[in-house]
Amino acid sequence: MVRLRVHKIMKARRISAYALSQGTNLGYPTAYRLSRPDGAFGRLHAETLNELCRFFRLQPGKLIEWVP
Image 1 (cartoon, rainbow, N blue to C red):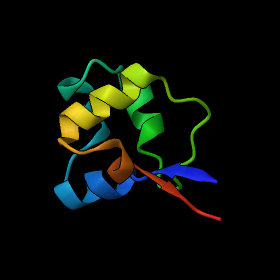
Image 2 (cartoon, rainbow, N blue to C red; image 1 turned 60 degrees about the horizontal axis):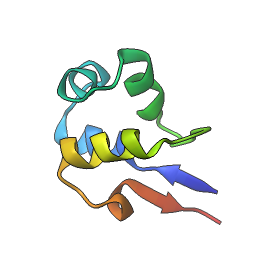
Image 3 (cartoon, helix red, strand yellow; image 1 turned 30 degrees about the vertical axis):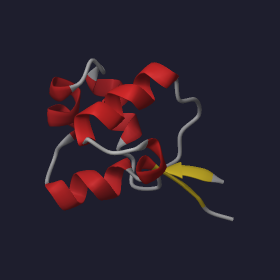
Image 4 (tube, rainbow, N blue to C red; image 1 turned 90 degrees about the horizontal axis):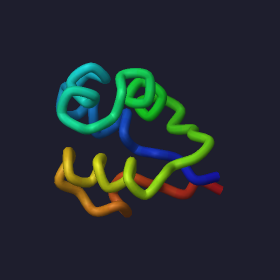
């Protein structure tokens, strides 16, 4: 299963879902869903991934992990 590491990154950097939504072009509900502790997500658009990479200043591989 592919999972997002956004929650772990946000926790390490002490960033809230509200701060994520304010620092990106993502709405609060989207930012909240992306920051779920289990890292699960249904769909991830390229624009959303780009916003996350820009905000965190990370490559996509640092935001996504594969868990068997």
